[in-house]
Image 1 (cartoon, rainbow, N blue to C red):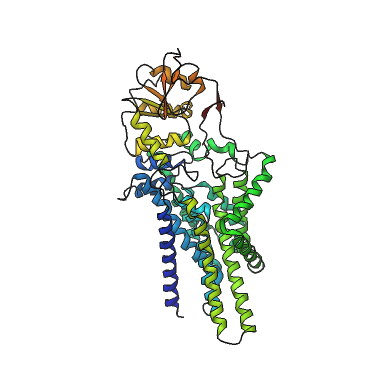
Image 2 (cartoon, rainbow, N blue to C red; image 1 turned 180 degrees about the horizontal axis):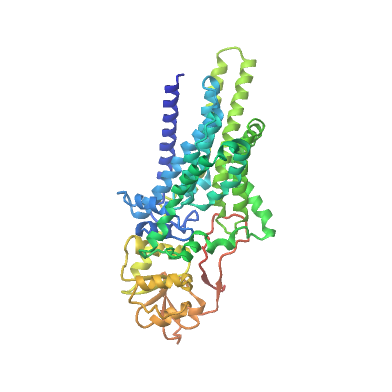
Length: 560
């Protein structure tokens, strides 16, 4: 097989993998805003993209810029278009997994049945990862994790090219690494593995001052996407977390100070449960057959390619430790890079099995049937990912989910003119932000957040955004906001608040609660205490996919 034919075949398979996986993601894509799959942050991200604003820490400048481009697509509502971005980058990740696996498996061999085994193994690994539940779940909602997986796969592919050819694409690696940090800072978890790779392989050449200087310049060019944050924040967009045009605001936002309390904060008594859940998730992604093949691949790779296998193992282990120790219910999503590494090991395991089968058939059978048997065996491995596709399709299909969009439109549409609505939880706040700022629904209404009211930058932003409200002289307590505006505008809450219930009457109005100035109770529609205020959600259970994580925002619940 000539080189040109091999390249065309590789390109055709890559395109086919992209189109097939994208078609599956498209069929299961959420039609609008969704809260499913721990996607409550989607409303904040989409609203920021619509308004070129600043979403919750760490600001995600690259994601916002790319999502803004996707909002210009002519299909569906704005949320659907941003969901489509997740599907696109998820589908683009799949052929990169294939190419990385193929590059590592082929080495310098270019023909024969070994290439057939490499092709079959690489396609199997790519499809197994494409239809793994956690990765698929993020491909159908507006979130940052498929773009992050794209950069993980791209990094591994570029390094695999170095393993095969001996030429390290250092400058593209440096640029894309800086750019990837503009999407999600979890890419910093690559550093321990990268230091190991440099120490074992390219240390001497990389330490040359000129090489390091150019690589660092490429890194800074990619990282310069963070300039978006202060430049855009200075224009005071409606979504402007931290107001990062100031030095202190920029540091607060980019350092994710709001979430530091969760990093490696899981109580020790819950670590065994988290580790057990981690093992269960590994099996769920690829099935027990995939886990077995991945262990085989790890064993053989560890014996023959220790440097790169060690790099992958360190990266996967660091991501796993971070996810296990991060004290939130949705931290399992941080395991996606570890699952990608496992998919590469799975591909190696399939390759080893096919090569062993080929050798066995060559010794035992002396007719033309070994080639047919080998081909059928390769096809059988290719069918295994479709078992995951069939098993997970129904659970991951969001094509008919409209719960979040119905909530946002219903609540805003029902409010009286010039009302103030104070939201308290992430799902409610971000859904209202999306429809109010992104879709332009009810521009006369002021949509505020209860917990962010404690921050000076937030109150200043509200004052600029809604100059009709009495804001400038108010303190950081929520009651001061209501005291300063009650009687002037209708005030509503998305969730009952015990502090407000102690001072005012709360009447249930559809999906919201109206705040009335008189505390006299008439016994009809009045919410009475006691209430219990839950603080920041603390995870004391293993990974759970059926709960939403509130990013530091509080919610009040009646005592039951």
